Image (cartoon, rainbow, N blue to C red; front, side, top):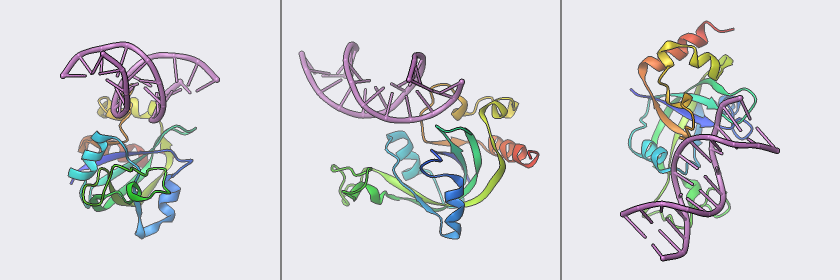
Length: 156
DNA sequence: GCCAACGTTGGC
DNA sequence: GCCAACGTTGGC
């Protein structure tokens, strides 16, 4: 079992939106970066844990957790001419972009902000905390995962 | 709104 | 295949 961090802008799709999807979960589509695509296509597996990270908003940070319920498959939005994620160069025979499905597990009492995360020694090397980081899908170590769950448990 | 950092594009 | 220009991301 592996752990991941997925970024999302909550004004577009938040942890509450994910929670509202219940056990059905949500297709995590629209990822248009090759490194992130490769993770979705090749590495993200059913049962993996996902930190839901809110970016570009007032309360930046880890908002809760989710679980992968479907591994990588061609992102349907690349074939949808009406979608902002449409990619005319992609074909069903040769898809370019991938998605996974996730379902909500937990909403933290408070969003764990960057200052709080940075203060934890176990999280000193966390990729999302690195300056200039722009990856929207990135691996998280088991140690980081457990440290963050621990912070959430003792928070609020 | 600013600006640094990054990924992508396109001319050569 | 290099690399400068450009557009985007994302914290502040």
